[in-house]
Length: 635
Ligand code: GLA
Image 1 (spheres, protein in one colour):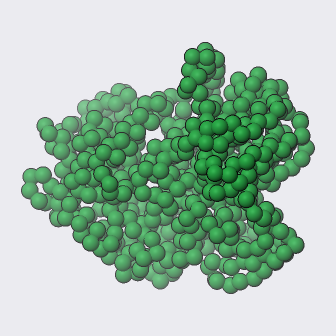
Image 2 (cartoon, rainbow, N blue to C red):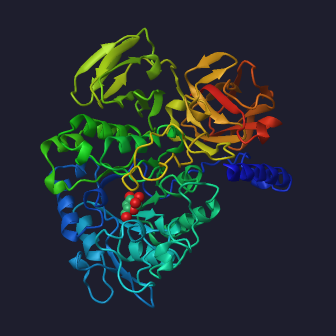
Image 3 (tube, helix red, strand yellow):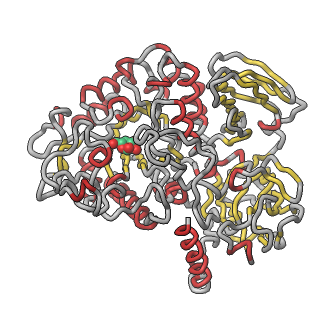
């Protein structure tokens, strides 16, 4: 704690010192551009299968090909499950002295093509099946298996140097091999090697591994070299650009929400893990889910939040637990998580196929607007998520987190629809249809998620609220000065420590910043005593980029949220269009009623919303919460 405080004070002092000379690099300066990642091929969340949850590192060619064939036989490929990804366990060693990676040909016999070993015939075969293929590496010198699960099968072999199979020092060589030579389409890059090899670790002292000064500390951002770890992941991005050529690729970041990846993952990769590993147990699914629920504005076409792969089919999510399995699947779909099956598809049952193969629910995930569901109602028992789809209809999930039945009410207002007109609901599990006005009461079975597609009369005709188009709103700068872990994340008992030690506290820096229909830190939107159920809440000293799809007008009411600390200081709200200032508020202080702010944006491609704090509003460790209430783009 004291370390964080010291850093914050230092940060503020540095900002003050640097501002006059660093004006050009001011992150609040509008650029007229969209800065979140759009490289690669992830306009919608990637879907497919991975070996890890099914087999851990005990992976081989036969298992992978059998699951690939199952994707075809079951027609899962035809509704979007196209990626077949090998995770940890494929590598044998890094040959010395030329550094070429060698494949474990005992497990991948088609790779035994001579001294060089090659995955090319393997990827050719999968490509010929109409599939895409993924491979796995680590940003450090060593793999997760070597460091954290050395008892698992198929660990790299040989001398210290031969066992250094990670990308560190070999980025260009390995990415060229994976993409230009072996023709892979997807790369997951883990981060264990940059975390687990401090000089005093027993595995280093014993001479098994070379030390690598950790860049990432899972427990503390103060102990993390944020710029250093980001730079390494950016190097991989650059190498992908070079070596994938014109071929589409997916770059999947696996830093578990550590390293302040919350702030930069969306600018570097196509998907970014927000949590440590999922397990096939209900409480752990809750933990992973909770790491994405407040982060709708950080996910866009080309850059998705990743709460980890699906465990549908296993443990608490097996065929005997259909409520749990369906909830896990539906929630992942609603939150635009990659839908990567982690089940041995040779054992697929009709019940499980009905879950993976629910085309209506898959369609929520793959909707072209790319809006992650927004938390409409929140509690530790029931949560309501609403996802605005490209055709203006809504995906809705009513989720019972508890092991008891729960009563829930869904309101037309939560859907941003008129309460006086019919709202039609189609249940995406049973396909039954019904309609209601104002609100509807339902009972949720233990752990059940009801999923609907809803249509009705929009409350805002001729426009779209920004919180209904989160896929087009990017918090380029979100005002967070001191990153904090999200305290709302369910703290499950991890299988790796059990109840030994003091417990794993939420360690992921995903808190604060920008939220849809909420103020930062999960607070409700309320300015000078007036409640708003719609808007974007962000901290002062922030800049949001908004893609304008042909709208003529921007309108909002701006002010400081009542949850704000400090109360002194002011924030000015500015609207920019393709780099030109269009409108500006007077300085707004705590307790002042929200004021209208409008701008003409016809022909503008990128609208930027800048909230500039001054005085205490700017310099606090937690700047003022700046609210763009009812923010909308209108015809
Ligand atoms: C880490 C990742 C997992 C998996 C394993 C492989 O734990 O988070 O998803 O890739 O490594 O060892």
